[in-house]
Amino acid sequence: MLLNYFVFFYMFFSGFMVLFSLRKHLLLTLLSLEYLVIVIFFSLFIFLSSFSGEYYFIIFFLTFSVCEGVLGLSILVSMIRCHGNDNLMSISSLVW
Image 1 (cartoon, rainbow, N blue to C red):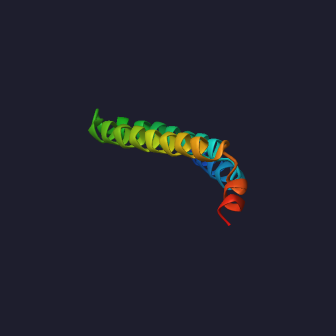
Image 2: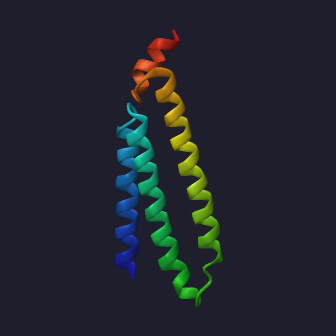
């Protein structure tokens, strides 16, 4: 059981490292955020399965994570329509 926590902690920490290292492209940042959501979902599922089926919080969590994903994709689509790519460094140079 303790090994599962270490595995989830390692997966979560590696997801954060990818999130902080890929700040240039918005699509890769959104993918790493979705990876973090999946890791948190699986860790919550393992944690809440010990409480004999209290899965209502997981349904709320999945609802909010879907809303977060849709919001990120809509920002990505509107940014690509305005600027032409998802390169964040070129957008900051276009503004100035």
